[in-house]
Amino acid sequence: MILLYFIISLLASIIGAICGIGGGVIIKPIMDFFALDNVATISFLSACTVLAMSMYNVSRSAIEKIGAVDFRFSTPLAVGAALGGVAGKIFFDEIIALSGNQILVGRVQSICMVIITLGTFLYTLCKRRINTKRSTSIMSRILIGVSLGVLSSFLGIGGGPIILVAFFYFFSMDTKTAAQNSLYIIFMSQVASLLTALVTKSVPPFNWISLGEMVAGGILGGMIGREASKKMSHKDVDNVFLTAMGLIILISVYNSIR
Image (cartoon, rainbow, N blue to C red):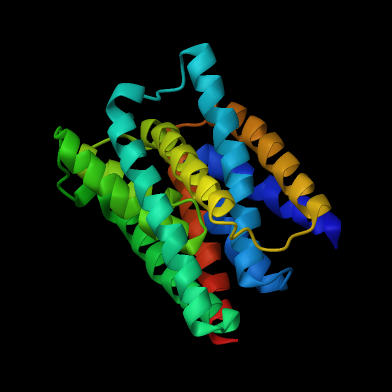
């Protein structure tokens, strides 16, 4: 069973690194599907895995000075996402405390996942026919980042799909550029969320071996996915993204009704 943690994080991180979705949107519903842990622990393990994978990719982009990450442009978004990540983490903990029912919270998360993944799936299919914007305002980027950070932190998914859609629609980015900049924002959001958990002492109980395997899978998946992305066209990346979203929609629907 422990090996399953590594396999899930590895495959999710490969896809996440290719598409720029981080991997949490894949890890969270699959771990819910297999009932590997409670909602709070799954969200924490998923966030740590996404953090490890995105940290690897962002650091490689910074060192190599390639990979299409525009730090100057994306930093206001990343700062907003970090602030939103803190708010989303606090919101999640409050919901858990008030409801006292992690199963119910997990069901709500699954329903939200269905809505988000279906929306991003349909947008990606139709994006060539959608008129996009080219927002240059720093304040708008911060506010968009806050919104993305709150939602992604609450759902424990890293926020990749909705961040990609934001890049497509608000900033008219192509697929591969959006993917790399998305990982930078995911990294900042997850750092803020994890630090909040440590400061507020709200880290849920977890198995250290499981965490180690997932982090290792996340880093290895990030390495493989980054190299694979370099050899793929924009259309190939879109196809991987659409396939992943289609599978996640089906799993999330099952998780929400079972």
